[in-house]
Image (cartoon, rainbow, N blue to C red; front, side, top):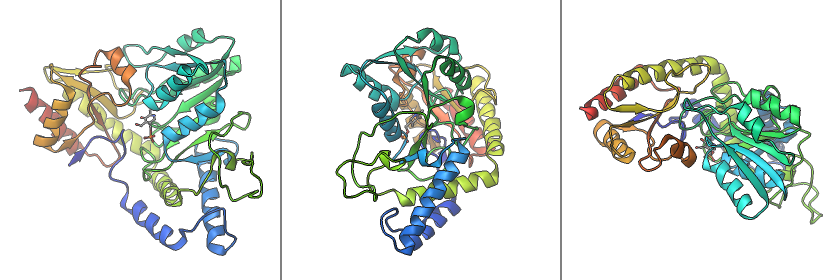
Length: 381
Ligand SMILES: Cc1ncc(COP(=O)(O)O)c(C=O)c1O
């Protein structure tokens, strides 16, 4: 199989990360933060060490405000339900994933918040000026993705962050697609909250993600339970990170994430990113030359403005049919349909038939790209 669905989840994972993860878990897989025996303390230390590593990675001031969740969706729900209060106004964009749109819609339907959704331009970028224009006196939060999971466009989040800072509005950055591919620095972006997921470009296993909070941010828990501290009280502790983490941690996931981050820093994130970008540009050029192929977003894929993701259609084929041919006849795995980002497709006019998304990872090669281009040429013929 030629795997070109890395924006959904990266595959394969580095073999050494999987092996080391299993080895570590076999040696130390006890309940962290609860027992006082050596293995439990070691497991707790491992978790704290991973928080510290993530805080450094994301330019966050306090490791205790790195909160582990099951994935980015869980982190986004924790953040949005914990930050927003009745009467708040929120600004978001038409580029967002359903894991942003749906919690916001839920809050809106329950008359908790009002929401403004700003558009993106033909090339796939949101304008900071549009976000500024949408700001109201009751705007509490701007929520936006760092990079589109359909178009691969990297958004001007730093400029949006500067606008938010000037107006005293919190910024939540969904770094699900960007983390692990390009630098994501909370302070530089002026983000109050960063959301990440372990199973995409951080090359960790599924089931682990998180949010990183600025110490000034106020956030309430939406789940309550065991934390291993102050167990005599029926009131859930307000101490971080426990305030937002109830129940036993996904220790194996945290181990995998930590080891994967070591792997990435050893290989060099910027080297891997450049390698992927060379391949996606080659794919873009190859597809562009095929009669009947329609490519979405920016006509020029630039290394500063994109991740290695692009979406396309062929003539008037339904994307599901095109994906099935790519899979069945050429053994190429892509993602078809709406990519959980319905407003992107509404804007592109592809809401009915969707699009085929090609998304690269660190293990793709030039031969994979040649194969994909040849496959599309043959289907077009
Ligand atoms: C931009 C974006 N946000 C959020 C998510 C949700 O990630 P997870 O599957 O880790 O919940 C995705 C995953 O497809 C995504 O691409």
